Image (cartoon, rainbow, N blue to C red):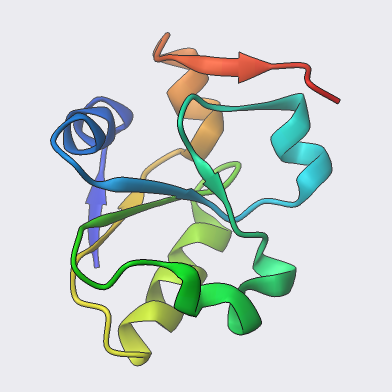
Length: 104
């Protein structure tokens, strides 16, 4: 699975990729990348089929570890267009990319 920087992840989202956040609801409510779709890792195996197979998925979590696991799971299910956002939401926010804070 390809690892991408936050800047490259944002470029891919702007080009049509879907940003998939696998953190839990409370983490997502604290801060998330603008436009990210929440599919918590705790529900991932039962909800992954909600994700499109015909567009690239950029996986994100807090720092990159959980999203890598989710991406590997998707690859095992036959998904082919997957990238993992290096550094996760922390790196996205630090890079000053569009994010939503404090909806909790």
